Image (cartoon, rainbow, N blue to C red; front, side, top):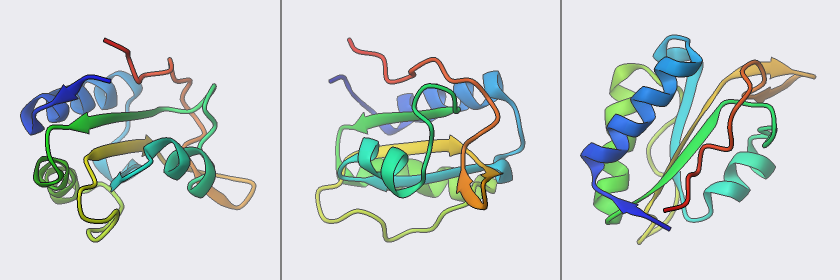
Length: 115
């Protein structure tokens, strides 16, 4: 898995958000030790059809800097997620689907790119 600086993660995520549209308030942002479990189990994001992205940062401080950046821009979410050493940042486009908050609405190319 590629490890990225906070600045690179911000660039990647912003480009992804532009591609799939919506205001920052229409996106959820957070940090997690296991971003796939957080996205697909906890937030009910549909892996094959929803707009989602995650990246591994170079440190837990970098991941939290990225989280703070997107929360300040207006993304939904809050600080305090993950634990000490949590290095993954994730985001997904929010919509209501069967009464559950999820990212339904924009098809996602499985955006965790290897390499």
